[in-house]
Image 1 (cartoon, rainbow, N blue to C red):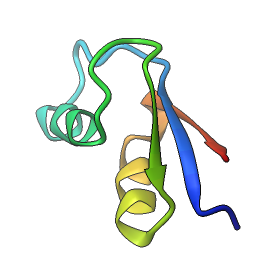
Image 2: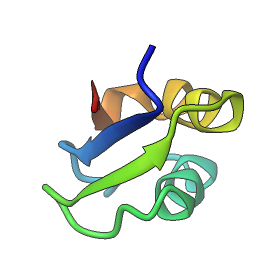
Image 3: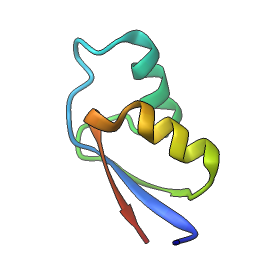
Length: 60
């Protein structure tokens, strides 16, 4: 298991549930196509699982 994961926003949040929009923003994703590296821990995994239709995840 990798120490970090790359998370990329691949789908627009227009029309998304407001709670999901806030989760995406909390992950540091602001624009379509933006990629951030995050620690691979339980909190990150839970947030990514919650917004899975909007993001792509890769292990680094």
